[in-house]
Image (cartoon, rainbow, N blue to C red; front, side, top):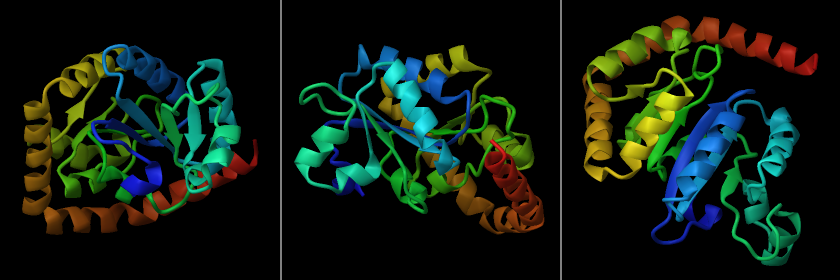
Length: 225
């Protein structure tokens, strides 16, 4: 995965997984601010619905952020430069994950992981996957679809819940400059996962039918746009 993203030595990867409308603008403005003091920072944006790619690309162009799609990175260098929105030979700062089934592998490369659908009232997404890789996880105030899991995870010190965009900016800036704090949160999250692995799996089994219905409803809304 690292090779497919063309990550270079010393680069830091901020991952925003399963994002929804209204979150990309917040994350991109935060990212632009972070780049001023973290020039080697790369943002991986993984929207929940791939049919929003063009919408997100318009936002990227509006914010004047050099970007590329993950699939374009697998093409030859000349085609990358043609399709990237950056001018000249500027390296893309943002990678859009435009493939299915790769988000968990992507989490293994992250320095920080933000769980989408939580800065807007969507209800959040699975916060467990990044914990397998001992990643420092953050999510917003709207985590009601995973309320019990997120509550216990926060109590264990294995994740950070932010109140909104200003709080997110504060914690991301702090954690990017504090490797020890990142590792401690990631380790606590991993230990939480190991202690409650059976219970977590049972909890997911209980809510799986609800999540399936939710996905169907989301697809229906998406098709209606």
